[in-house]
Image (cartoon, rainbow, N blue to C red; front, side):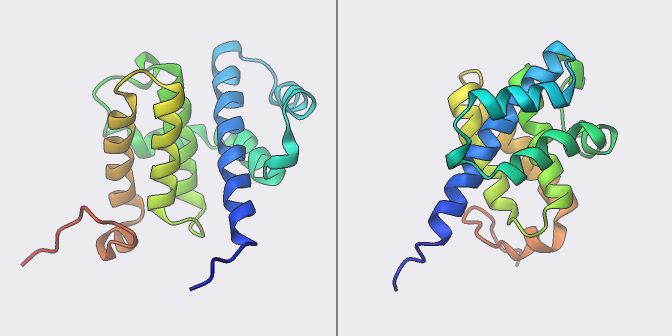
Length: 160
């Protein structure tokens, strides 16, 4: 079956947008800087030709705008308060949970996989395992129907 070439750039552009958004959200969290200033810095300093600019902007502005709702969706699955988390993990959980809440067009397995890959690259040594576990629980809660069907899941066993 031939690969849809037009889907490849979009997926790669979304991946890059998530990486940049995670970095921008990390910066916002630690510095408290204005989101528009951070956005402008990233637009000027980063290579946006390979990123989905609209997706980056949505994540950068909507995660903080809906922060209470986003954090409430994952807080119950944490082993410590949100403010005590590593800032990279916090940015990843916020971003991925926002996607699970609002971007039903993106399969939950894609959201989790992207966050896990970013955790492997930017997080502490075992952070990716923690991110995976928390987001799997969030997906079970927010995307119960999709999760139960196991779309894209290889680790979910069917109940007898």
